[in-house]
Image (cartoon, rainbow over all chains, first blue to last red; front, side, top):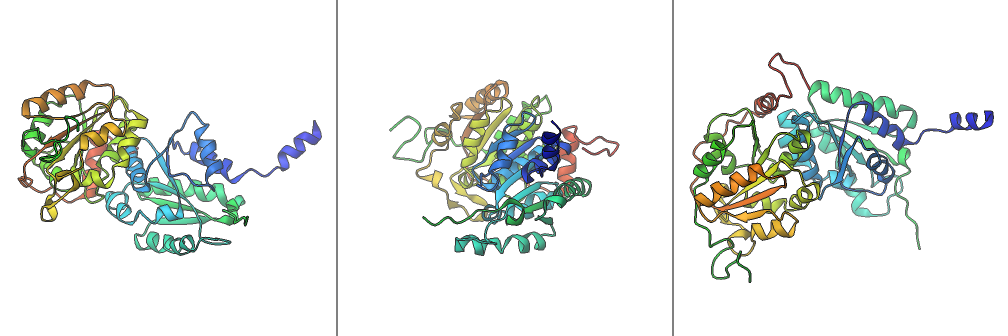
Length: 183
Length: 211
């Protein structure tokens, strides 16, 4: 028993269980996503949680519209996507959550760096932060498990308090990323 | 060939040409339970605005194609409030996947109205694909929105709208409309529009309390 308890305590929490916990603690109950391999364990946690209304959308733009509509009706949501999908959002970000001051929360799994094998992903990844910066959207890159809860919780609280969208970029340093496996 | 398309004319061409402002006015006249209305960009939005201020209306500016997704978000957040999206044909062509998402979620409180003039009217009336080949109602049905219909004339629209407002499945009504421009232009103050809308939905109180 003692040994089992010690082992449980020493087991590090996974990045996805930490993220899931912070979303729940902040009363986020809607999750719209365009699926991504790296996000898969987080999507599985959220899909299995009956307090979440979680579902796939056909495009990231569509998901951002849903999350913005939900916020205005009193339901807090999050949009989850890959970095290449985020790259489709500049116009919608500018004309909807930024212009209307809606605290839309975005979680972006970062491909295109630290071992990327697809040149297109490597290029489009470089547009994420310049787009967010040019629209003055608050964003943080999550690369350390020990900082994750603090960064995510404070980002959500600030977004709501300041009525401004925010983005959390999940680095391969946190998630392991997507690894190329030659056949 | 089915009865929704006519190869000698445009899809839905059995329907009479109606006027967008007049049909929007007739739709709004039916609303007495605080129904939320989301207006897509351009003339769809302008004619919703032209029907007069209403705190439960959201006037989208930019973000072409997102009237239905925004309405779906509102519908999921307030299950006891009827939500209506008014969208144009050009905008819906840009985001047709949202019809499948709506059908999958099957909200009991969401109704969609598509104002189809077969034109990108606000940019100089270039033809859209609905002018010749795409049948919005056939697309919606194929996406799983089986409760989708062309309104054949003004009286038929009124009947379909009455049914939609009572329905417990998502619905879509498409209208063929003429090429009259919007009566007046929406005021472009997005933060004010959002604030009014949230108060209209009871999410923000008059004392300034926040969600």
